[in-house]
Image 1 (cartoon, helix red, strand yellow):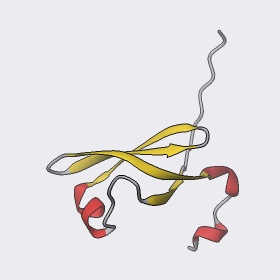
Image 2 (image 1 turned 90 degrees about the horizontal axis):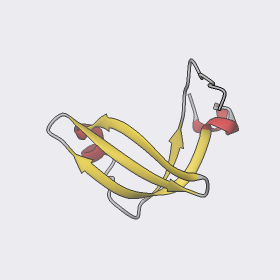
Image 3 (image 1 turned 45 degrees about the vertical axis):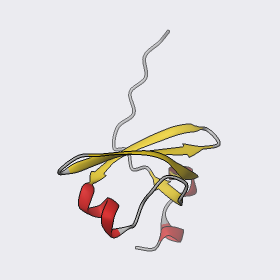
Length: 71
């Protein structure tokens, strides 16, 4: 599947702000015009993608459920 075939509403272009690397998984904070999007991915993927702060990325969000609570 190419990136172009994914619904545009699920894509957030931004730059990596911070990476908290763990032995198995890492937290990657992406700063977007709409705020911070945090992804938890394998530390192996962080290394293979050569991710580091300042790198431009596309955060792709796939949600199977969205809950809403009345304020």
